[in-house]
Image (cartoon, rainbow, N blue to C red):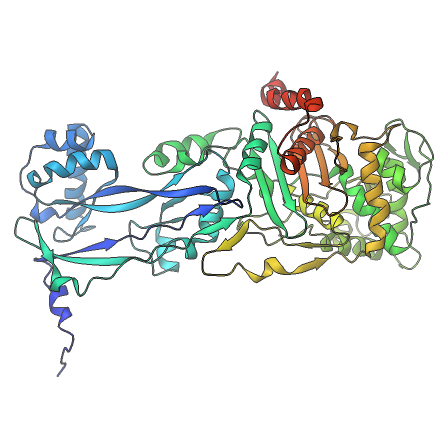
Length: 588
């Protein structure tokens, strides 16, 4: 014989006299690094229906109360009847009739609710984005699907969860814990009071607030600079790995994917040929171009095949066995520092070959594998492990990759394009910003992350761990000097336009070949030279040379972050970047 000790089961069984209302928690708030509120909550109301309790009512008055047409209400009622016939829903249990009624319409409906037997409302929470920026970082919240409910028993039909960005990554912290309220109802569906005096109710527990490392003012400025351009900006604080800004352009206002507006706006954004939903900062792979010469130099120094005094001549490029890699005019010969400042292709063809064909290796395959190991140490070719679940790996080719293509018969000249960041190697903007942070730190980096603090909790420990590149700190000095001379130097220095009065900036231009149109403009930089506060990577798609667009944008971002102003002597440059429309220009 089974004896039921807990009398509450009796109350749960009395579904004809009691109603369970889920108490949805307030979702955790999101702040930027300065404490500015980025994401808050706003109430909406689901209209619930208990079909067996519904009696004839004035559908016109009901539709006017919630802002729908009479035909739309009739269609919703027909859907309820159809679901009962197909047994998708019970006529005895409450279900959602109409989702996310705004507060102002709820106030009108509530005054007339007594007229509509079988209907009641349930309060819900949706997101409110305080700025029209950082949509790719913040992500959005949407109704859960069957897969989510199977993976996590916390969720039920009609619940909402983070789908992308920070909303998804830190969902377990932000969502809080649902509660429940049990009330008695009469035969007319009217509430008569709490069951058992409210003793069996459970309170909802609000989600935890989170603080991001994002600087929302810098983020907004970056989005302005990238308006009418395709590409990305990623800026990192080298000493912590904290992401200061992550711009993907074209972007969108995160408010477009809130509440009932999401169903209308998501298809438009998804079908937009400029791909505003794509987070280029972590998902787009580009050749790094000449920015990779910094890493090639560091590998050469560490392997002992290059010294800061090593000079190579350049006669409009590199020539060997019928292979020619072109180069722009500049003084010749060049040593290491000036080779970076002038971005000499020939110099790095020689350095790369000396790495691959190092006599200590028996074959070019061994040399390439050594090169690849350093590349992996810098964070290329793998996901960095940031806060973003859809981060792409990029690509660093292996010797086996070339063995398959060339039947094992290849050498350093075959893969020479890797020396100047072209060929098969692909990197993401966040990886390039991370590489720049590693150079600023002279040999190590922290995994880039946007989480700074979780209320009454700790951020993932992996964000506190140093990752070493395998390059001795002493070797960074001439490379950093070359990056500074790229901006301060004359006679062919490639980034003079990025000079900032009173700030020592170290940078490197890049121009990535693009088979589908104009080359991509790339620039990486950090500042100040001593005790760096910001490392940045800028990609502007189909924009030509790195010094034309990416370098000015990066320098404006650096200046804005470090001084909160733009020097009057550079106002013309700021206006040029803000007003440029490269998307439509490239369509002509």
